Image 1 (cartoon, one colour):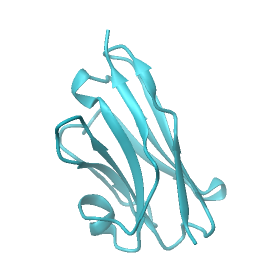
Image 2 (tube, rainbow, N blue to C red; image 1 turned 45 degrees about the horizontal axis):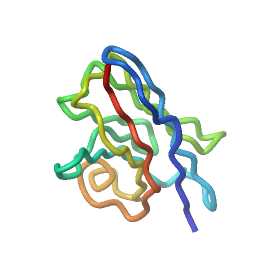
Image 3 (cartoon, rainbow, N blue to C red; image 1 turned 135 degrees about the vertical axis):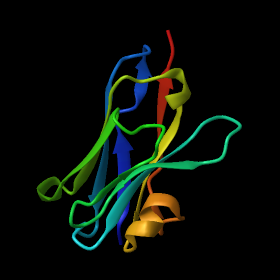
Image 4 (cartoon, helix red, strand yellow; image 1 turned 180 degrees about the vertical axis):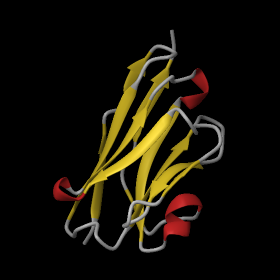
Amino acid sequence: QLQLVESGGGLVQPEGSLRLSCTASGVTLDNYAIGWFRQAPGKEREGVSCISSDNITYYADSVKGRFTISGDNAKSTVYLQMNSLKPEDTGVYYCAADHSYAVACVGVPQTWGQGTQVTISS
């Protein structure tokens, strides 16, 4: 059974950087697309970025040019490099997996991690 664990969250100042990791266990990610979602207090969860099993990527307009998603199949890990962070990037970030790329990007994926808190504040 696939399980996902996020790490790398924290408190950083505006314009700072963080790299989130999503590590899978139980099965390989060969047939999965991985999405990163975030939820800010009082707001709906939104899709941030996703990557397909053959490395097709998607970014929400709000993070395009600042965030980069990548995968390391050998480590069963997907990364989200976040640069030029803004206060509005604050929230709990979740990674999620689904066999469907579209669902992993903007739907409700089948498998979720527990989330990692990202706080952007001076």
